[in-house]
Amino acid sequence: MSQVRVRFAPSPTGFFHIGSARTALFNWLYARHTGGVFVLRIEDTDKERSTEQFLNVIYDSLTWLGLTWDEGPKVGGGFGPYRQSERMDIYRDHLARLQAAGRTYEKDGAVYFKISGEPQIIDDAIRGRVERTEEKDFVIVRSDGNPVFHFVNVVDDITMQITHVIRGEDHLSNTSKHTELLQAFGAPRPVYAHIPLILKQNGPGKMSKRDQGALVEEYQRRGYLPEALVNFLCLLGWNPGDNREKLPLAEIIRLFDLPGVNQSNARFDEKKLAHMNMAYLLEQPADRFVALTHDYCLRQKSAAALAAEPAYFREVMLLSQPKIKAIEELPAYTAYFFAEDFPIDPKVRDKVMAKGDPKARLRELAAALQAADFSTDAALEETIKATAAKSGLGFGDYQAVARLAVSGTNVGPGITGMFRALGRDRVLRRIERFLAA
Ligand code: GLU
Image (tube, rainbow, N blue to C red; front, side, top):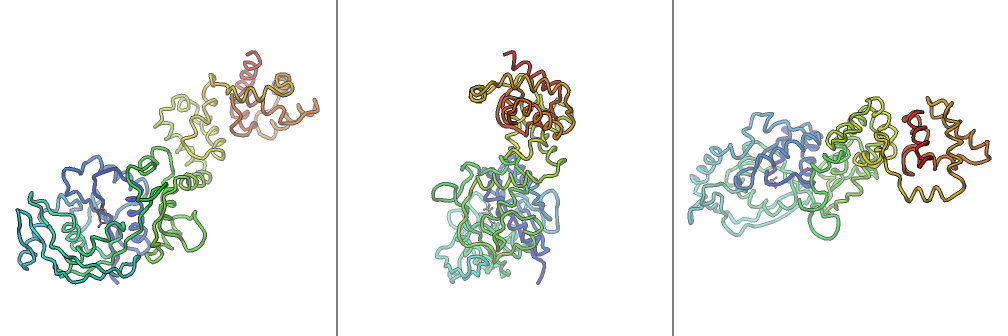
């Protein structure tokens, strides 16, 4: 068989959403699986609704997700131009061919395509056999001279030699118009593969751009890992055939195929995405994790964290890595590492201070920490344990109040890691201040 050529054909008329990203991903995966070509084509004939801003969001989101295109805007290719607004002479030429074949007529300034009216049988690679008969001639060029979606879409698939049309199921009902046009041009048919809809998280109906969590750029802004989103997206309508959900991309590429795409609709699940993201965050190598957190702090303009010594910033972020669920938790989670005027959580204080004599414990610990070795967690743990043993108490009797004094809360990285990162001076200063208050 000749080389597979697939295309992702977005219209830049709105923000780039989860559904578009999934369509792009399935095309990209199929191209990578087959050693084929992934074409990006911009369907921007609707001049009123298409904007450069939305176009840039498409480029940025695809690039962020790693769905690089082999042919298309910016990279070029042998079948360009790749923006429909730049292909008007190609459409004019193809219109002339239909006119010459007697397949068009004009009515009220619009150009109509004369259908054959024959049943159109589509062997969809996902849906199976679908039969539909067009009953009415349809407009291919509007009275304002603008060619219509069905027409330009088919002309481009022909001229770009697209072999497989992988797109959302909402286009299944258009396909008989498209095969009618292909037939009129005497062009070979691509393989059609209509992928199931993505249902909104709650309630019936298709997910739309307006639904919560629908925009790809939002995940980018929130510090999500693109590979987590890609992994999540590929499971919206596909699975590897076993129970695995988290898979390396190379494995997804190896296993992805059209018959493996489900017929039933997939439901968007933001919690599952968050969970996938957390799993990817946990396993990030230190350098990449620190770079991600640094980018996020830059975007959030977290001045105090950005002003810290790079080695200290790194240590704090790496201490937090196993504890957080998302990058966006980090500013609040680590605030007390970067500022002395952190708040004391009154609920935690009331709870911790209600039992025993926590101030006495803190005084004992402060005395022991004066001479303690702050270089390793093990040494600090020894110090706390030895202090506790002297009074016949447990580690916990010291840990909770020390944490409260040093961080103002009861959540955070392990106490010894926290002490080690903050260092003796800061820890003792904070304990003293707490005792004095
Ligand atoms: N521009 C169409 C869309 O965004 C593309 C349809 C197709 O892939 O054929 O839905």
